[in-house]
Image (cartoon, rainbow, N blue to C red; front, side, top):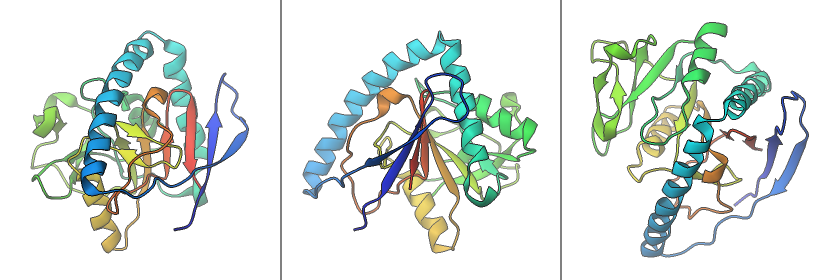
Length: 233
């Protein structure tokens, strides 16, 4: 397995030219499937608590919300080869997830990006993505407390994906809720020769040094927090 160098962009203020800090991330050691499951469940419980605390601080901190948007603009400006931004899949936050809607509005208003929302169509199926015009009153209730556009909405395949998560590490590996929806979706797109740019959105408190990783787990291209833009080299 090739080890990757990961660059973290840290923005303590509103400067748009922060230094890149190369960090060597070691792969997680192999272990049994039972240990993987136990490790992930323990991590999920811990990270849920961490996220709840971070969310309370974030909601009352206008500077942190502005830093998130500033770092997102930096991510867009530095994306490789000016890769396309439309269509882009976002999501509506559930529970204490960090709110990506200001980022989605940035794309829609300033980059003329077509927005999509994910739809869970089956327990063991990949996500589908339906067009979203920004009107949340038109959305329907979906699985796992989510909301999505109605079936009559157009479906498309995103070239940029804003991805919710429960935890991440400096290699931009992602820990979700355990349903495997994004992993299945990305794997299915890869088999068709499609590789959307993936950006996880999370609080810094959701970062851990290493995650228990299985073969089907798909790393993200980058993760954006309220303080840092982590890139997978």
